[in-house]
Amino acid sequence: MYAQMIKTAGTGVKSPEEMTEEERKFQAHVDANEKVEPKDWMPDDYRATLIRQIGQHAHSEIVGQLPEGNWITRAPTLERKAILLAKVQDEAGHGLYLYCAAETLGISRDELTEDLLSGKMKYSSIFNYPTLTWADIGAVGWLVDGAAIMNQVPLQRTSFGPYSRAMIRICKEESFHQRQGYDIMMKMAKGSEAQKRMAQDALNRLWFPSLMMFGPSDKESVHSAQSMAWKIKINTNDELRQKFVDQTVPQVEYLGLTVPDETLSWNEERGHYDFAEPDWGEFFDVLKGNGPCNTDRLSARQEAWAEGKWVRDAMMAHARKKSAAQVAAE
Ligand code: FAQ
Image (cartoon, rainbow, N blue to C red; front, side, top):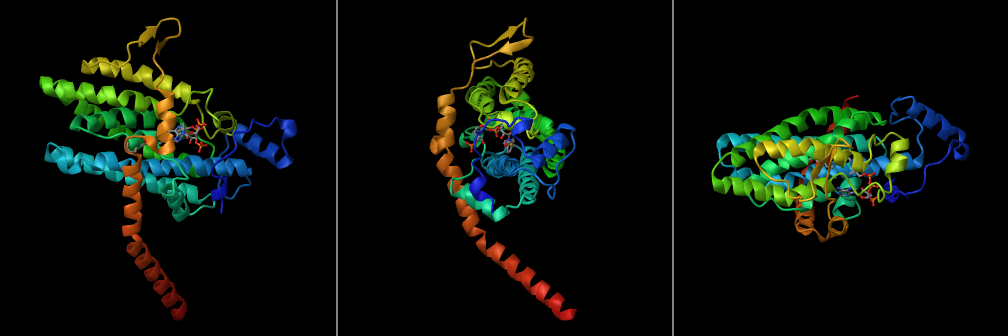
């Protein structure tokens, strides 16, 4: 029903004078840090922005299983295999909590899935990069889940109740994911020369794509101003990217690896690292579908959706039979 509103206009934030009475009340509710619940009145654009963001987030969790799922059968030990399997299953669970949160806004999971499969909705750019070696699995857990946590911890306080509650649960699991990734990196970085080279190579390839996860720079971000006014987003994209760099650089140093950024330096005055921006041309190109794995990722999901049709049909038929039997018994 709301699918046509998924692409929200990047309009400016309304002043109180420009708002209707209902919008002013809504804004006051949000400003008082009260949660917005599904049955509450909300501006159409607030609903559309949430459907876009939560839907994109859910799709990211689902598509995000692919680069790691690819390594389950090739994990180096039984223990690593069990850990990776559990982690990938967690991501599926995260996708499901998020689809449920989006459904409370009046869109069905099937509609969201169809919008993903038709290319109308996005998923995180990071999952369009390949995982070439076992060290990439370490780097994904450490950097990708690390970036995801940096973004999601503040989202626990987002204004929409179901999204905020889903985030609380998801964040607990993400910290386990991040630690398992760092643990793989420690083993590789402290291992043989060949293992150390693999760890450095994974960091070289995944550093800038991880920085892209926070979205375009603040000056290019169409939605940040309105999303922050509505407390859907708590921080800007650049604020979170900076926090991620500040947190991750000492971890790189501890591993004895090098950040693939010659301009990286500690800025005493700012109390933060200065660092090179990712290649935004590459980022927008990946968003357009031209990343190294866009076609593979989407076709894997399209295939899974087509092959799962008989399961969905069987479950619907069972539900119909069950409710008909219940009605007959009453
Ligand atoms: N990739 O105006 P902004 C995970 C789009 S979870 C693709 O700045 P906004 C767990 C954006 O949608 C990772 N598209 O947008 C895991 C908008 O699209 P439009 C996912 C991106 O929403 C780990 C346009 O660009 N996390 O990884 C990206 O205010 C390991 C303009 O951008 C979330 O989704 C991107 N990186 O800020 C799973 C967190 N960035 O309108 C498996 C929730 C921007 O043109 C394995 N989301 N776009 O259609 C958010 O916090 C926000 O949506 C941002 C973007 C910060 C991502």
